[in-house]
Image (cartoon, rainbow, N blue to C red; front, side):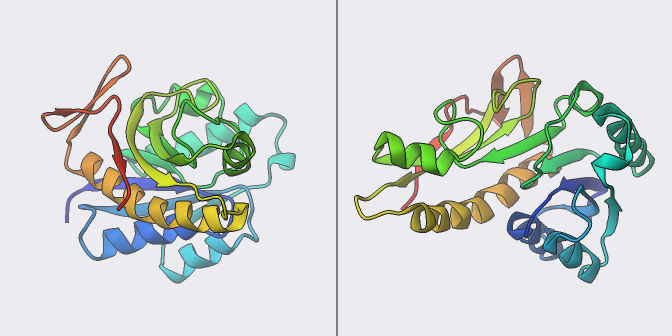
Length: 214
C-alpha cells in the first residue's frame, strides 16, 4: 500500500466517511485513512471509525477559548501523523486560517450543489426553491471563503418536478459516495495539480470538470 495518509473530518452519520474507508480497504484508494477528527464525540461516524480501528481525535469546542485553539491542537495531531490530505466529510465547523493555510492545497470538501450555485447551508433546499432542473455535487479545495475554493470535480443530478428535499438528497448523497473516493484516489496517485484556480487531473484540465450522471 502507498504511504499516502488521509485524515477525515466529520460531524454526523459518516456515510461519506464509510465510503472512503471502504475504498481504502479494497485498494481503490492507494493510501490509508489514519485519523477521524470530530467535534461530536457521540456522532455515529465516531462509532464507525472505532469499528474500523481508525484513530479518533474528538473534542468539544466549548472546552477551548477559541476556534484557533482547538484547531492548533488538531494541526499538531495532523503533523504528528504526517497527514497528506485532509478530507471534510460533513464537518459542521467553519475553519480558520490555522488549518486552511496550514494545509493549503491539501484540504478538500464536498458540497451538494454545482458550485458556484447554492453555496453554504441547505444547498438542496436552495436548489428546489429556485426551481432548477439540474443540480449536483462539487468537490473543491477549501480556501478562506464559503465554498469558494477551486473546483476539482463535479457531477450533475437531474431534478424532477416530483423531487422533494429527501428524494433529491438521496440521489445526491449516493453520487457523493461514488465521486469522493474517486477524487481522493487521484490525490493518492499524485494526479491533482493546483495552479491558481486551475486544477489539472493528470493531463486533463478540469476547471469545469462536469459530467452528467447516467
